[in-house]
Length: 149
Length: 435
Image 1 (spheres, chains in turn brown, blue):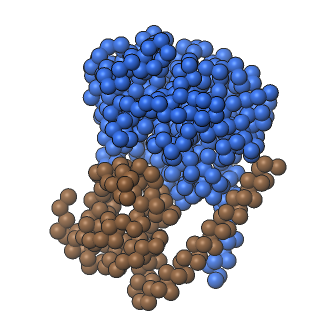
Image 2 (image 1 turned 180 degrees about the horizontal axis):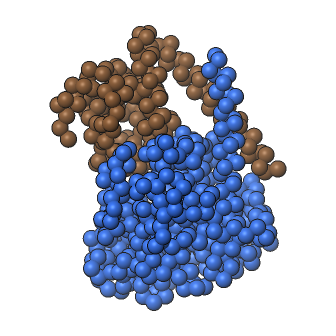
Image 3 (image 1 turned 30 degrees about the horizontal axis):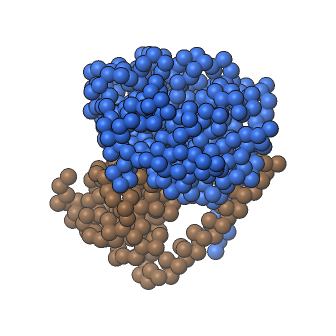
């Protein structure tokens, strides 16, 4: 009995999340006028699910005390060079965002291609309630060329 | 539209599959004993928003205290609780109970941290680098809150698994967990493609339980003994009075799929490896980082960073866990119940507070409950069961990981009541039983 109930609840939950996700996706796509942005967003979402989601979570709100949120923070919405460097070099210091401290280390993701980094950052900067300009492959390339760890 | 339809068709299937997988884990583990009576299912209406087995009720006796980690209840029924971060410069709270409420009477100790323990006329408390003790009077109240004695100092704390959980035995020894500042001792922590370090250097000063003298001041690493090694991180630990032995709950490694997508599916990565209970003897090795325990195969498996493929066995020199729980649930509190208030089956069994997962994403998260593991003659006997559930607030909160409350510390009161802390909102729950 209990098993069935739990299964039903889970099912309902998953269905509603799916519907919600579909809605947000729809909205974002409508706003992104350029086809380039749309392509980059789609590709970026794939990179996000492969390399980011397990720590930063599906809603990008992170994990208390451990993994920082990617929503409404200058680390994500601010200077693109700094942001690209975080992906290339990782992040190994305590960070305070909105009064909460986060301490887990982020490994370097320098094995990602320039295009993949551009896509995932464009995706994150334009999802989860974020709105900021796209990151281009050329910008990643430039930062990588002059990157000092 | 087409995609959306496909999604709504596939997602429930995935959900049900993971649900079945999750439940299948309950049958696994070294403790399985099918002949034991079936577990009681917690029911709603236990009070304080919790689901509890019938006859039990819960009350919120204090709330919004801060990051309440471990908790100790004195013979007088007074409470010491450790805050993860000092609040107004004070990291330990002293509360007194009156009816169904506990009120903060005093706060002291300038350090944040996790461990708190009362034994032999002293209150022991830990920061992430040190262990202190405060002398108690005959009512178990701290005599001089501004002048603790420093028992251990200079412990490693490197921004990963920093909390120093503590417990004491009956022979004047203090046990301190020193968590590994790494996931699996890769050259570059958590970096895809980075190999595991053979002869993992972390193990010299972390990734184990250290034993110190409970009454000697200013002890460093050199004054202590590495009591057990190969433990990635432990928060829940307790001394079993029945067989006079240290039991610990290990937080298993993360990110099998992230780091090895060709070897592990997202679903496997969500439930593997097991969160293990170990019964330790001096000199034991639990095998981290070279292996992990797979609760489905019931085997010690060679870690992929060291040549494993998810099937090859490893840890030939490592001890077996005495109980295994599904992955990433984060056991933060362990308590052997020695009281008389609860029904007989709970006596000498273990309560485990599971803080709840994060490393299951994009699969649904799980945990945020207190489990009961039955014991017989100082060993786990029979299937574990969920004892207290509902901390997260809803099934949706559990799945998303956005839990309202996260169980952390456990303590037993002099009348046999069970206390549970929540370090997310600073709640203290008191669970009682009436026939």
